[in-house]
Image (cartoon, rainbow, N blue to C red; front, side, top):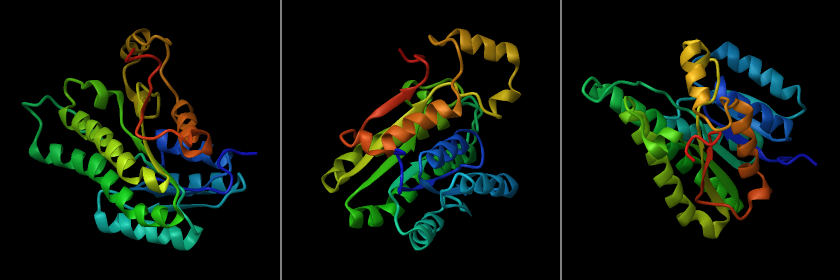
Length: 248
């Protein structure tokens, strides 16, 4: 029996990196997948085909989670197309790193809007359906940076720490309706984005991690499968660090 058999999941920002890894493993575990992307149409079409080939229903939606109205429309479209929303993975996120003295107001606002406000938008959009079903699992992607902070990332750290507070509050509000809300905080995950970094810098990072390696999108996706499945039926309001022991 596949762990997510018959469940429908929305995953935001899934055309590459961690989001893509989550979509692939969710489909392998039997979930029907509705995913969003912002600009990479080709990557989205490719992913859609790949997921359907695993024998599940899948559809990509060009949707900006930072827009309240687009999030609402997405939830309505997914219910119309798939019939339910059992799992929401808020994964869409960006960085605009700089030291506080150099960060612009625009760069601060944009990161908060895409990373944090999108979580509010999407959670509010799926809430109605989950309340009606009296079940649901909301999984919000934070970061070790949201837990411990990082120089040069005040905007990113604030957005990711905000996600933790938001998720705990949702867990308290919706627990009585059997809707769970948890956070995954990835550490150094090796994706196409990190592949562009200097190899020596990456080696230094790996050396500082107790497990002596960077994580993979699969490492994060497997934890999301646990939180999306009924195996975690009594887990809510928690932050799971997937960081190879970085924060130990």
